[in-house]
Image (cartoon, rainbow, N blue to C red; front, side, top):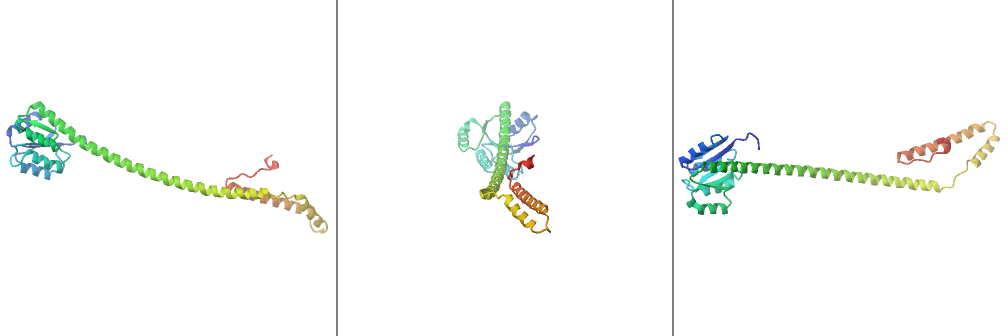
Length: 247
């Protein structure tokens, strides 16, 4: 609730001494009081008020309507308001009835005692503020729960996406491992017989330089090796480095 909230109290009682007591006791309090001398006008005040009264105090012997009847209406249409029933000790049965129906938070005995009435009003103000504080905390909890739900859902979606990517990478790695195993299972081919055959053919043809052919063959092997090494690096593998290259 805002710190500068203006509290308003409705008092439904035709007794002029009540209004005088209220004015005297609460002259230093920042509270606005609205007086109604009959039930119908008090009922209209509740119906037309844009913001709820902080406290509604009704005299049990209210003209035109019993106080508990007015408070019963307030309970259903202005539930935020603190509700006090005012009366004499002789109206004890009305007190019991109002308490059993959960219509009131406090009973004020007439004639009013200054200190008791002041304490009752302060209690009613605290009760009214606690209602809005509880409502604020409830809305905050709902908002935070909604944010936690969205965060949890986003995390689950991200985890599912990550799991899918890992599965796809595992499949690619598995394929590469199988290819590497199939290549490693092949018997190594010696370069010397092939070179001997090329050299023999070259010797019979004086138009081709044997050193150039051997250089081209060696370059081809290196090119194939580097291409396969680049492909393996893209997939996260490291090809074995020959001693001559690592030196």
